Image 1 (cartoon, one colour):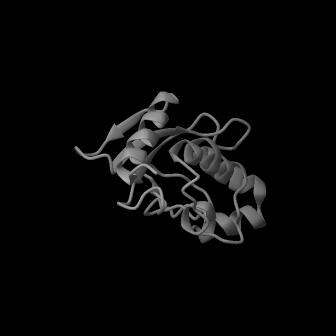
Image 2 (cartoon, one colour; image 1 turned 90 degrees about the horizontal axis):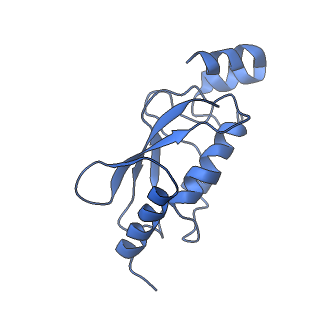
Length: 142
């Protein structure tokens, strides 16, 4: 079993080699930004978001902390803090997952399939359920 710091290094290298733009926040490997492109076939296609990632000391046994730096209008993202409401990050994280999973599976699924019944942005959730065309317009307008 490799040490958490080795695993952190490996996961970070794997992310960088997967063509993600990664920018370290300081000298350590615990905080960094990743440029994330909205998934194809979604309302977010064509958009680019800066995601702040913070890896806890116990990573990969404890999930990374993830937040949108620039604004995104989405029922499961807090508009002020950029915090993400995502079960796989918050409750069901497993050391089997890595950073590439976060950017290639979890975040794209979040943007493709918003869950308005578990909102962090109540306004976006209500608009999505009440008036889908207005919600889609708002997403594309931001």
